[in-house]
Image 1 (spheres, rainbow, N blue to C red):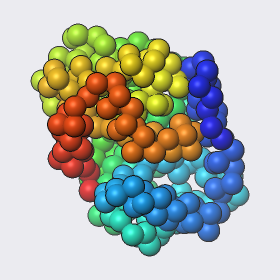
Image 2 (cartoon, rainbow, N blue to C red):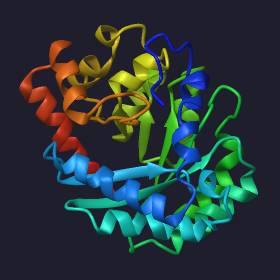
Image 3 (cartoon, one colour):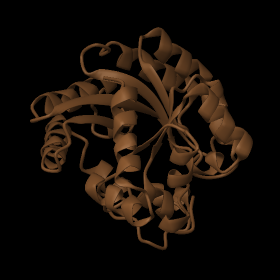
Image 4 (cartoon, rainbow, N blue to C red):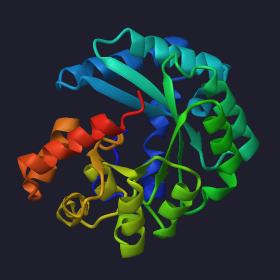
Length: 266
């Protein structure tokens, strides 16, 4: 359930989600894991949490997408902190399936679901064919974000921007391209960066090579997140410690937190 340090690629990293997903196929399991995530986060003094997950990966035992979303929201609502949900579509799923996902998720807008995301293997499955799903999510009143720039070409980040993403999950590879970085800065799009995951997916060679410090100093809006506490084997506190050791000042780390509050969807 934990991706190794020598994980060779994003595609390999994603496979380590499968054991956890396999045991989250009932409403009871989904509600419990959502609640426990809130409890664990509260122990780190997190007071606002956005939970991203892909409902269509939890249908193996007969649940509907609506039942999956409802179970997760029930767990989040029972927790000790403010927690909201971002529904992820998967790149490998058909566009019409993700359109339907966006429409169902939109039924929960204002009731705990605040955003729509796209995740998965970005080398094999481009984002552009999912435009109808993003349009459906926007029409349903959901904020838009997208996983991009963790594998492949820097243009993947631009593809996400062209779909209307207000925030980019990761964006590491795209941020290394001066033209893409300039567009991120000029449009004020936020990068939700996850140093450990970015290293394990080989978007960066080492934590010391992570572009987060440089981007913050260049005026690009960035947050620090975990990606997955389990697969990345990390906590939010640890991610901040890593960036502190990488040379970021307390003021720069605080600015990432202030950006997170300013850019939150809830």
